[in-house]
Image (cartoon, rainbow, N blue to C red; front, top):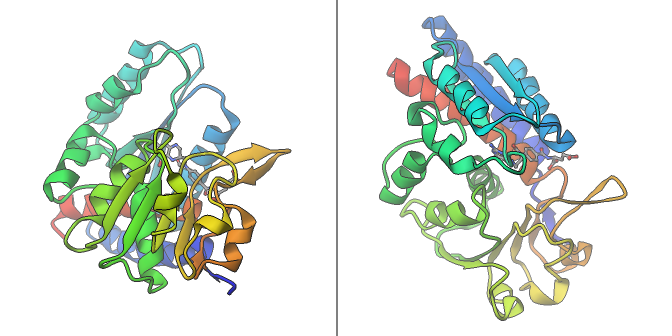
Length: 284
Ligand SMILES: Nc1nc2c(c(=O)[nH]1)N[C@@H](CN(C=O)c1ccc(C(=O)N[C@@H](CCC(=O)O)C(=O)O)cc1)CN2
């Protein structure tokens, strides 16, 4: 078997053109959505991601507000920028690029954000709303994964999903999303403390690999026909190495490439959150 490709790049492009039409409709009503970003420090990866977010905004007609602080910024410096964006009416939603440099504490920063401007769905209020089933912004990578599966007709309802990794942007929140009645999956969250990862993986209809461990998911641990989403990013000689061994493509039914799979969907879902928030505010 050779797996079908869950093409995040093409799917994200389709979503972006749908969003461009919704942004045009909002603008016709006098509402211009604006995304703010806060980048602290000089990590080249984080800078690349933030630049990509603004490029995406330009493509769909969303305004951009960029705030940058040096790696020497204090906790108070970062929190002051957050206060500034909370008060800025041109900024309808914003994100703080993670991770923050060592020495800065991300939780007080996230808590200080106005939850109504949380574009990432990572504010405690947004995660609480997700847990309680109240409408609000959803975390971008988990949302991107669900959308990628839906648009490729991968059955989520009733599926056994195994997630590897307990980070805040993916692992912790995707279970909340996939176990909602609308998705109806059964989710097992595995992590570095899991005793027999292979035993869990072998039962999975859908695997979400988000541990950041190169080639952690091996062909012998994947059920024939399973859908495998490779979220992990490690780098070797300048190239991305995912969490999924290339041999998995011979066993799986669907596989997301990395790059070109979940990453572009994360970006598209950030735009989606900004547009949805603006629509909510405009009563659309
Ligand atoms: N505040 C946030 N910080 C971080 C998030 C997030 O959702 N919110 N997620 C990641 C980084 N990230 C977005 O911020 C992100 C990661 C990867 C991609 C992407 O498109 N990757 C490309 C490959 C890029 C490359 O060559 O390096 C791909 O997969 O094709 C987009 C966004 C952590 N921080």
